[in-house]
Amino acid sequence: MLLDLDIRKLMRAGKQSFQLDVRLKTDSQRIVILGPSGSGKSLTLKAVAGLLRPDAGHIRLDGHVLFDAARGIDLAPQKRELAYVFQDYALFPHLTVRQNIAFPLLKGWLNPRRQQRHEQVDYWCEAFQLGQVADQYPHELSGGQKQRTALARALVTHPRALLLDEPFAALDQGLRALMRNELKELQHRLQVPMVLITHDPEDAAVFGDHVVDLREGRIAPAADVEQMNRA
Amino acid sequence: MNMDAWTALALSLKVAGCATLIDLVLGVAVGFLLARKRFPGRELLDTLLTLPMVMPPTVLGYYLLVLIGRHGWLGAWLQNSFGINLIFTWQGAVIAAAVVVFPLVFKPARAAFEAVDGQLEQAARVLGVSEAALFFRVTLPLAWRGILAGVLLGFARALGEFGATLMVAGSIPGRTQTLSIAVYEAVQAGQDDTANLMVLLTSFVCVAVLLTAGRLAPGRLLGR
Image (cartoon, rainbow over all chains, first blue to last red; front, side):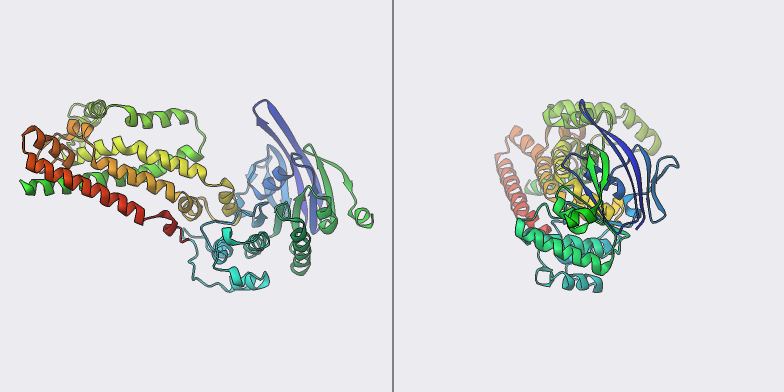
């Protein structure tokens, strides 16, 4: 994946203001943006997904221009063919696990029906051991099951890249290690490019081929993940 | 005389039903607009639309007469362009009821839309679902509970509408005399039997509406 990110955005809230200024160019399959809360990493990921419009700059992914202020290009999130896994998963509470996963497969005005079967949905239920809970609603799931559902819903669309927002922050310690390994294995198997943002250096050590440090809206001199792994 | 009570009831249900239907469509649209869009004068619009809740119905009725009466600017236009006259018609009663009830429908709709987690809409966007589709697939199903509560309350209130309806539509038996107006007329005329029947009828209908509301418990609509 060739990600070319060069964005600036001024955020204002009352008298406070925050300047985001991120430049990043990498051809890594696994990018980790590491930073404390308030460093602007969520804003950066939202900008890539099209949920936040930068003031200036450009975002390119594998030669596709997602955003270019100078040329007046701003692709709608619907057109970017990305997948976004939110920190608290953003599963649709009124839909079952199966309906959630099938959600992006239907583009019309109606949700998938409860009984409706899709080969791909069955495949992902199987792959993520969600078969037992396929007809349950999100509020009935454990943390790990919620995350697997969110991942399945993201991957069923065959996205160009997987954007992960603090994927393990909502999990307890034991589950975190488990899901980290699961995601790592999955990523190796599917070879889907991913951008992961986290405050946890552990995540960076496990996933990052390319780790960048974000501090107060700017990228600090790059940390070398090989060194971090050896350390 | 008893037939009159049933006619009045049927008329009341028709007027309240039409008014509620209009308010459902407009209330959902306005509620969504106020909840999700930022535009100048947003809170002013909310305040203006809430006015019917606090203004005396007679004042509202007077405003409506000024607006849609034969010499009102909207009424004159309707009369000249389409030959439509709303004063002293059941359609006029529908408009009066719709205006009075509107705050009861759009306020809960706005609150319900505001309570929907915006992140779910963002998730749907990234998943490739269009804005219109995600409204019907995510936003509306999650806000439905609050909207329905407002609509049922609005219907009950529309059934009891008196002041504005009387000003706009008058009290023509069989045509614009709704149940609540008929009760007043019966009492004024000393027809206690008719009044008794109609009061019982009204109470029964109100209980039935509330029971229906209970049966339509939104949990079922959500499939839980």
